[in-house]
Amino acid sequence: MANLSRQLRGRIRSVQNTRRITRTQELVATSKLKRAQDRVVAARPYAQALRETIADLVTPELMERFPLLRRPAPPSKGGPSRAAIILVTSNRGLCGAFNSNLIKEARRRADELSAAGLTVEFHCVGRKGAGFLKYIGKKLAADRQDIGDRPTAQHAASLVDQLMADFGAGHLASLDIVHAKFNSPISTPPTTTRVLPVETPTGGNKVRPDYILKPGPDAILENLLPLYVRNAIYRGLVETAAGEHGARRTAMKNATDNAGEILNALRTAYNKGRQAQITQEISEIVGGAAALEG
Image (cartoon, rainbow, N blue to C red):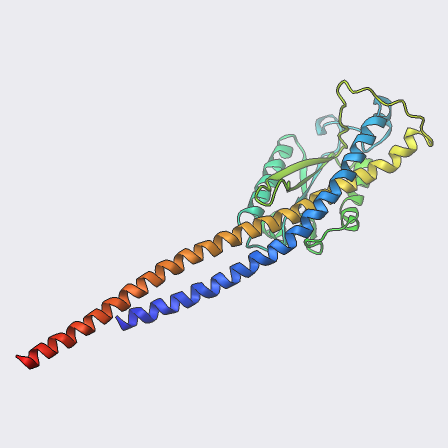
């Protein structure tokens, strides 16, 4: 019985230490989540304004003149055979199935592109995605582990500028980014966003504004399209960073709650064992006293 009590005390201390760590991780993730969520909210209006402006300017004639808008021919008809996927994951774990879901989405998209006759190259942001792809034998075109959970516009430009040049030169068929879509701290589903060619939104029955443009739409689009592409990458980075903190907070809260339940069960078992030991000692004392009296 004494040996069992020592084992239970040791397990209780171990679970208490684990719960202290998970609780701290939950608080840190909560603190970082607010700042990351603010970056997501700040990025969305700019992206929407860019999208609407491009939609108002683009015409069928202009789509053929700008390489970033042009749809390449399929590989079977002499088009480029390379397709790029930017996979954004985290550098750290302890965030549940967050990274594994992103990797599954990237592999699903890669299978679709391969079925279309394209050779897929992976550009990884984050240690988790890069580590898994290397483990299964994939060769990476880029491995960026320097961005972390505070991405900037400069990080986005360094990721996509060369890919934009390759696409404009006709060496790349498409560019997708696989990232987390930040709906809320508990809803961050993996999402694939087509970056190149730029998909211009259609306004439906919306009346096109009658703008007087100086300079003309050519000059404006020449500057706006690269900004739009860089912003798409930046949004993928900041939404994934916010999603990582939300997933880690949820995972650590669940771990903390589970540790509390285990502690309650261990303490109950310890108290029952202690109570049984005390009862046995009292019974032995009473029995011994009765024997002396007899």
